[in-house]
Length: 352
Ligand SMILES: [Mg+2]
Image 1 (spheres, rainbow, N blue to C red):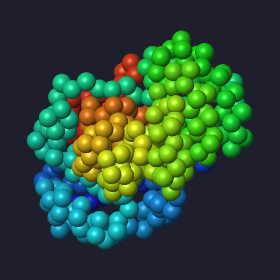
Image 2 (image 1 turned 120 degrees about the horizontal axis):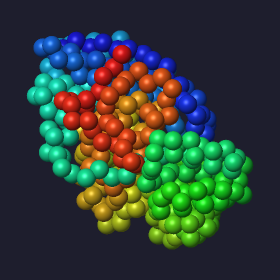
Image 3 (image 1 turned 135 degrees about the vertical axis):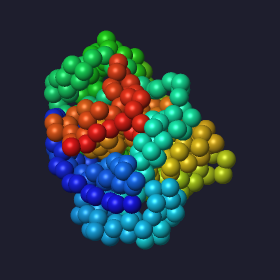
Image 4 (image 1 turned 90 degrees about the vertical axis):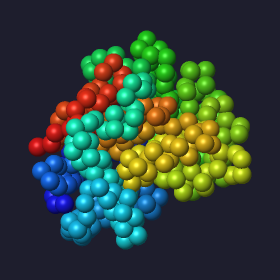
């Protein structure tokens, strides 16, 4: 098969601030894998934290070496994945290839990927819309601008402000009234911005607002404290940065006990759709709830995740809705708070 790689800079409509940084724009790559007249599309979006380097600099070094894929057939997805993992290829690139190969398979057979996986007729969970860290009035303005898309059912609020808990509380209180008029569901993502004591306090403070759970309150590396917090916290605890792939789930589970209540799976963290399905199975085995999330993905990456989203409890695939210049079109449709595949073969995404 042939591999072509196109690079784009995607800009955010509204910069997204969370406890670690502010995101304004990102470079992404679109992989096109062609064989027998069919082209599968895959996306690579960078991320970097806690020494896990999928930064753009780390990723682009690998692009010329991916010519090695030309000796394979798209039906050798597992063989390809094994070879690339052995070479130490970063997970975001593994994901881009895995997504393109799934798209190729669906297009070749003339079936949407979700149908190919036997998921036809399964209900789709709510997709959250994200409000970043900001001053209270700007946060409320962002909530109102999101509502221009139409009604939603689930909000993700980023807390863990570098300005401390008082800033977190002021922003959340400002949003709480508006949220109650639009939906009863909201959860909080801290991106590791609190310590154990702060997280315990904030879980108690947030519970009366009806918050569903706290995502990644502590930093990656503090999984022992995360497990302690999960036992005593007023709210369930989900792991994101602490859970990249199946090996991390094994690390979170101690004996018969899971060290948290749920995990956030991202295709770029784990290496693609196949590994995400393995994580879902393992997480369910340990009674963990599952969320599917994103980085600065376009409609392509988020549609790939949407095709398996009927297998999970919560969906957080809103990044493409905040892009000014998404190079991809079509794909899953955001409809009344849910992201639903469009019924076209493969992923159903077009790209410039
Ligand atoms: Mg998160």
